[in-house]
Length: 359
Ligand SMILES: NC(=O)c1ccc[n+]([C@@H]2O[C@H](COP(=O)([O-])OP(=O)(O)OC[C@H]3O[C@@H](n4cnc5c(N)ncnc54)[C@H](O)[C@@H]3O)[C@@H](O)[C@H]2O)c1
Image (cartoon, rainbow, N blue to C red):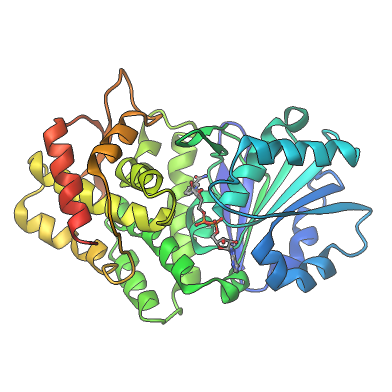
């Protein structure tokens, strides 16, 4: 089992990574002042596939309620949060509760939001079960739900007290969801300049999973160091949003028919074009850096799309300042620029170029 310690301004916590480590959860919390009143929010599909191990592990706890959540971006909402608050109240849970999330990024973000707001904050354990949530969303403390047409508009920063990454959960993850996680991994290649990410990604796309634990470890280790430096995204942490300004807007425009990680891949390609149009990278560099998104060409496909709507959605992005869209762009791997503004014509052109690779 691998361990990473995260020391942020608001909280210090451990991330444990390994195969079949979920049953050790209560050994890992022993002596660490976790409240013994457990409320576990589990993704419906995960519970269908892993109910036996979850129930066996929780057997004998004095107080535990399992809340089954049907994950979708539509259900990542304040309405669903209200239902969970009501369930907590009905079952007499108070601040002395440990909320456990078992699922992908949707359950993780929503459960973390509940944990950060119910009774002004409970204990919180993240158990991610998708590749995307293992390499990214379970670490760093961004919580949230969608509101209206804006993704993650309502949320808080709230670090977990423990993250337990058991790669065994990946055994039941559908291939398209694995690809989605790889889409989020792709950004780490540009952020770190590490060729490891590119080669691991190629292996996994080729059904060779030998590097998966290492890939999760390296991704989470990098992300947690960024979060330690800038917990609430005032500067450096913005680099983690590479591809996301375009990506979030594409997801919304497509009414979530395209998955988050897939939209991020298109977003990265569009950001590379924009970096080229703004003279940050040469044509040769553009072609070299596009090799990674192009690996996803048969996995990410888009049908009809309205670029004007995407631009309008980007203009509502919560990361904008003074009504201006801000981009994260690439100068070279490991040299990322944040808060870059660009002329609307160039943004449209970059988006069209990025999309054209996947139509
Ligand atoms: N908080 C952050 O820092 C952060 C970072 C990146 C993404 N996100 C958020 O993460 C969300 C996407 O997360 P996701 O890609 O994990 O999607 P998800 O939570 O929707 O899970 C994808 C699908 O896989 C199923 N599933 C999950 N684990 C499974 C397993 N082990 N076996 C079988 N099926 C399983 C789920 O039921 C769902 O249908 C988005 O809402 C995005 O905004 C948050």
